[in-house]
Image 1 (cartoon, rainbow, N blue to C red):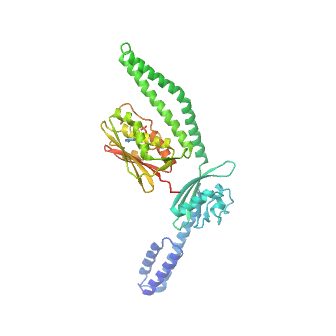
Image 2 (cartoon, protein in one colour):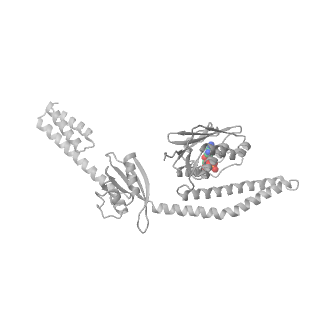
Length: 407
Ligand code: ADP
C-alpha cells in the first residue's frame, strides 16, 4: 500500500477513535482491506472507498445509538446515568415518572436534588468509589411507594442507577409475614397442649405395657414424635417471622464468640451423646469481641451444631473453631457426615429447603427452617454465612461477623 494511503487510513482511524467509534478496530480493518483492494487503482478511487466506508460506519452507529435510546425509554425500570460529580447526564422516562418529574427535567440536576434523600446520595457515592451498591427508599408521596435502587459504576467513570418500584412486592411480603405470624400464633397454643397430652399418654401407655398392646403403644409414640415436630416447626416459623420483620438487631452486646461456642456445645451435649457424636471447640486467640444480640447469635451456633450432629455418623466428631481474620471473627462448624450435593448447596439457606428427607438417622427430621433463620440473623449483624461440603466426606458451615473499628 502507498505510504500516503496508510497515512490517510491512520488519520481517519484516529479521527474515528476521537469521535468515540466503539468499533474502530473493525472499521480500520475494513478500511485497510478496501484500500488494499484499490491500491492499484487511481488514488482518488481509494479515498472515495474509504469515505463511503466511514459514512456507512457512521450510519450504523447512529442507528445503533437510536435503538439503544429507544430501548432505554421503553424500559419499565428507571435508568439514570450520573457523572463523577453526582450530576445526572441521562435519565429515561420511567426514572422521571418514579421521581414525579416532567420529562427531561432531571438532566443536569444532582442526585440530592433529584431524590431529596441523603441515603441515595451516599449509595451513589459508594457505587462510584467501590463499584456497586444497593438500597431502598420510600418516596415522600401519599402512596409511600418504595423504590429499590441498584447503583453500578459505569465504564466511563460515572455510575448507572437502576430504579425499580417494589411497593407491591413489599406489600405482598408484609401480608405473607403477617399471615404466617398470625397462623403460627393461633396454632401454637392448641399444638402445645396436644403435644403435652401425647407425651403424657406415651408415659402412661409405657407404664401400662402389660394391658396396652405393643402396636397401640407404637402408634401413641408416633403421635408424640410428630406433634413434637409440629410444635418445633411452628416455633421456628414464629422465630423466622419475628427475625424477618425485626429489621435490625435488638440488644447490642459485646460478644465473646469463643465463649458462646463453648456454651453452645454444652447446650447440645446431651443430644450429641445420644447420637454418639463427640463435640470439640478450637479457640484461636487473640479473639476480639464483636457486637450483636447474644441470644440470636447463640441461636445460630445451636442451629448449625444441631445439624452437624444430626448429619454425623455414630462415633463422629464435630469441631467448632473460632478465629479472627481480615477484620472479622470467623466461626466454622465442621462435621464428617453425609455432606451436601453441589447443586443443593446454593439452596439450603432458603426456608423449607431440605436436601433429602430420607438422609437423617432416626426420627430427628427437621423443618428446613434452621439455616434460613441462621442466615437472617448473621446478615442482620452485617456478616455472611456460607458452606463448603463434599458428599460422603462432610460439611463445614462458617459465618463471619465484622470486628467493630476502634473508637
Ligand atoms: P433442617 O431443620 O431440615 O435441618 P435446615 O435449614 O437446618 O433445616 O437445613 C436444611 C437442609 O440442609 C437440611 O434438611 C439438610 O438437608 C441440609 N443440611 C444442613 N446442615 C447439614 C449438615 N451439617 N450436613 C448435611 N446436610 C445438612
